[in-house]
Image (cartoon, rainbow, N blue to C red; front, side, top):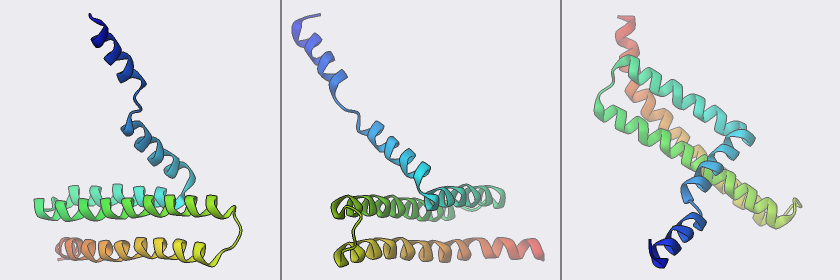
Length: 131
């Protein structure tokens, strides 16, 4: 092994792994944010229902996109809240309130859309169980 190869291996070991940071962020949010845990539980229940009802591939795609959208929005909301709290030192500021409220509103919008999509997908399956 020449110097260049050796040096590249050392540099590769020293490079931060973005996936580790991303995973750590998800773990941190899961541990500290109750809403994230609720949404992960919802994800499991939605995917279990989709599996049991044998939904179509297209329905799976919509469910996956909705679940991914909700979880992504909640993670972004959590990061915005943390950044705002850091920048204000915990003290009240009207702009901080606006930032937090708007971020929470984004989560609410994707949750409403996801509930609508889930209703459209699952109600026919549930009605077939009743009949």
